[in-house]
Length: 153
Image (tube, rainbow, N blue to C red; front, side, top):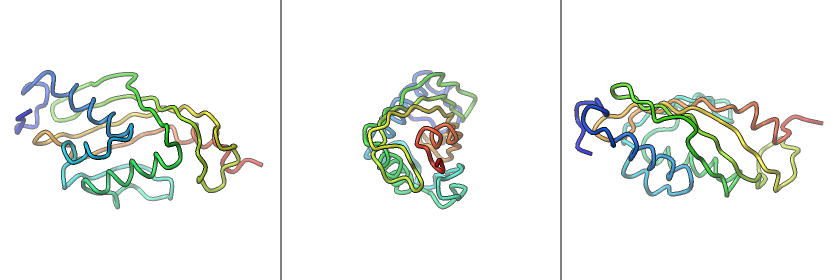
């Protein structure tokens, strides 16, 4: 992509589409693609399942671990883009939907293994030198936890 000015759309109008395609591929299980699209300095901003704010998730290995953790609950998890990519300078925004079948392992979940789930979220990515350097995740975790019957009963 060759972008060093942090203005993704101005440098290459197809760059956002390529980045988002790789981003979705990573979340769909191709963790190796993280090496190509995630900066070693990547920072995550998210409400984590364990109660953290995402600040402990950093760099390429942190993103790989986050993907593996999410996919451990639903190995057939499939992400697709509903809206976007929307590009504003160095920021790319996408609204996504994820669908899959619960594989077990969520503490307090009452849903049986195999329960089909579907939930939405929005990712904001800050790009520098063709890599994600900051990631804000806003997922509808309440919807997911309701479908998994966490705390029910």
